[in-house]
Length: 328
Image (cartoon, rainbow, N blue to C red; front, side, top):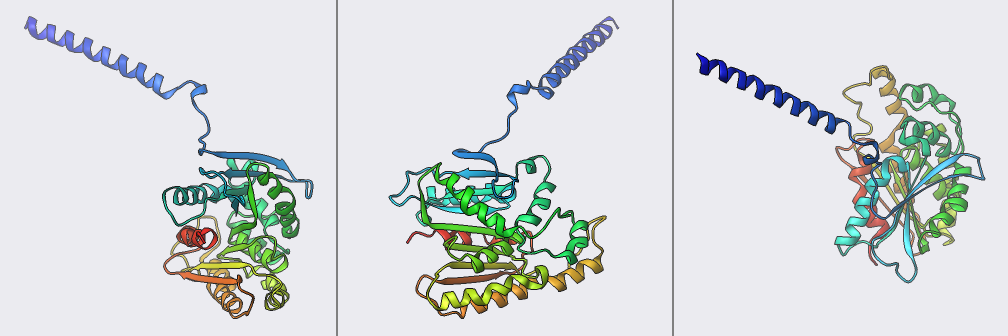
């Protein structure tokens, strides 16, 4: 009996010590010193915030530099719109393939985004509605509000294109040698709309244009008003841009679920019919492919089956890199 009581007391003591140990360990583990917590960084990247002298708004540049020495003519540069979302993906894919493979040129990857987006992702949704749209489209505002994209303004694409050319490019060139003749512009959705606007109105601003799921439907397809003038310049041999257009094959398929508090299924179905994402992209690509330009003018396109509006940028990533950065 005495042995049992002793065992009980020993067991109780061991349990109390174990609980104390666990408690002390949990406190130490759950509350690390604040100095030991820092934002994650990507090797050989730079971040710069600046206020534009053109429109007075703030921007954030995230720049991934190659791991290799610069070539004689400098590095090609890929400018990634919606950089708050896509910079890391582009940087990892482009640098990994250039470093470990034999098929891609080493390039500088530049994400163009907004300083406040790291704390509130909706900042990008609001700001991009101004920067990436060439015109206003009041008819879509109610739908945009329901999907969390309430715009503060629209129609700022020309000013934003000025910012890219006059303020972003010089900042990047100050960080590393760049090949001014080899620059690529990527954009998705409204970003794809912006890429097409830049292509049609300033086809020498970049050498390669990557338009993924472009919102051609915006403002009654007004972006296409400049297509004929662009086509004449191509046919005359004045410009030789390289163009890649891609879209998800499921972008005209109604979703199985709707967002709580978002547009109704009927509203979503109507927007899908109105946007005609696949049809508009395919039609434009075929018209551009039919143009007879000088050598150097290239148009490629692809419909990615079983991909939707949000997955197609990732499905098309390596095809875009091949198109923009393949070794000669």
